[in-house]
Length: 138
Image (cartoon, rainbow, N blue to C red):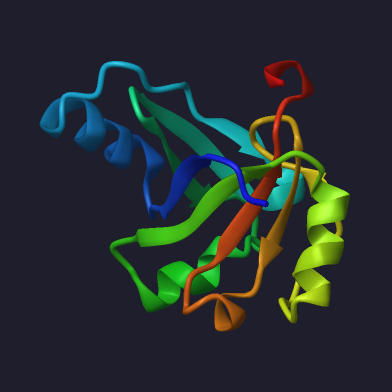
């Protein structure tokens, strides 16, 4: 049911410092400019790699879901992994039927497509994002 791994989300306390690390230390050459996504409570940038992306996410606003994560992990760290699915609503229903706690109704994510998150307690301790594939990709 899941498609390709789309990205790994990394929560960071300072997105500019994180971008500098990926660019200056790791040698990444294709990094997007940071953008705010207020409905998700994050500022994000993508490190584009030949095999996928790393999504850098920094809290945006006082109600950002990233704040609690960074309180437990002040230096940042892996926050989630994202898999593509063909139909987000169908995937949400199937996940719920299989005992997964779907944490939200489908909403627009950083890629401009619908996303949902699955509770890490049902997924071996890993927060999983399901992202509807861009329709033109098929």
